[in-house]
Amino acid sequence: MFTGQKLRRLEAQRLQEAEERLQGYLLGVQLQGDTFGGQNAQRVQQVQGLLEDVQNSHPVGRMVIDLAAVMQDEGYQSIRLQDGDTLSIPNTPQSVSVFGEVQFPTNHLHQAGLSVDDYWNAPAAQPGRRMTAEPTL
Image (cartoon, rainbow, N blue to C red; front, side, top):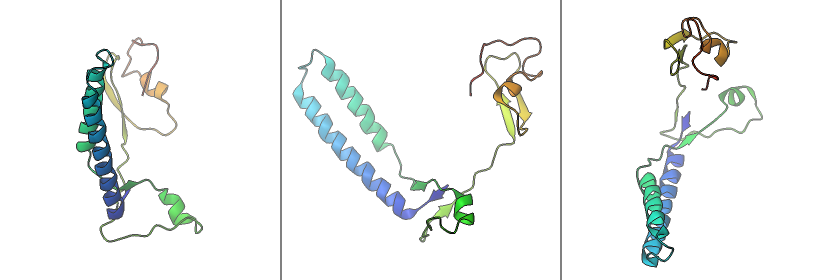
């Protein structure tokens, strides 16, 4: 994950603009009163929920990049780094957890080429029978 200071500032600016728009919209909805047969109160709650989401959001400045393409392809658009930018490479989990409607929740060492069904039907997870029709991720 690549994070940039400039992107973070732009995100913060966009969040501020969204908050201001939502506050204006909320005021307009509140001023309309209950003219739509009680639906206005529901609209006010929806807008207030969106406003709270925006207010609780924190700008990250994250940009998804294809690091392999950046490193290997000379024609790939260069990324200009600025002071404060960071590149984080997350750890890849080495285990797969099987839980939910199984007889025995288990963790398995990840093996390349195995499917969800392979882990779902592993003897440790289902000694004897399956409890649900289809596995989900």
